[in-house]
Image (cartoon, rainbow, N blue to C red; front, side, top):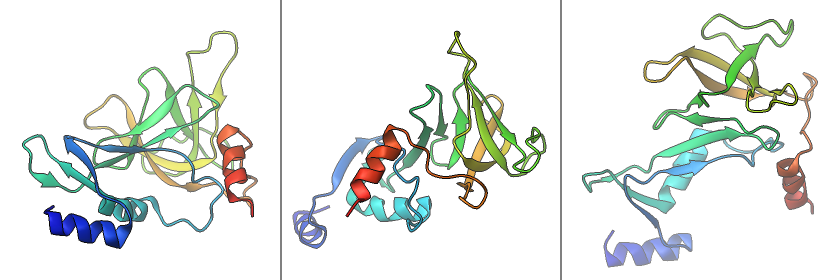
Length: 178
């Protein structure tokens, strides 16, 4: 971006573009639980990409890559996006699975929706299985071990799910109070 473009950008947006450098990536995570009026994640990324400048490893300017992390304060495990795709890859030492929302039986069919569950073997003094309230599908991974999970939506209050009170949820509630 030339000097004139940077000045116009700063005047229009109120902030300079953030230069990520060669191979830079923006990693996002959390903060959207409980908000019903947010745009879908791809739209949020498209809006945010206007504020970042990124280059590939050869130095050519490219569209800024975003990766999302589905992590929870309640568990040490996280599901991280495969670079450039919104498919979540579980931590290799955890076991992510889907349950049928009506029967709570294991979803074994590829592409079928289910409630995400994560088993964390890191804890040795109690059994840790966490259900964050997300509906996902899974497919076999071509580049990683096992399965990749595709986020579809959050469970609704009608389906028996409400915002879980955790440090992230509490902070979110405090930030949105009038």
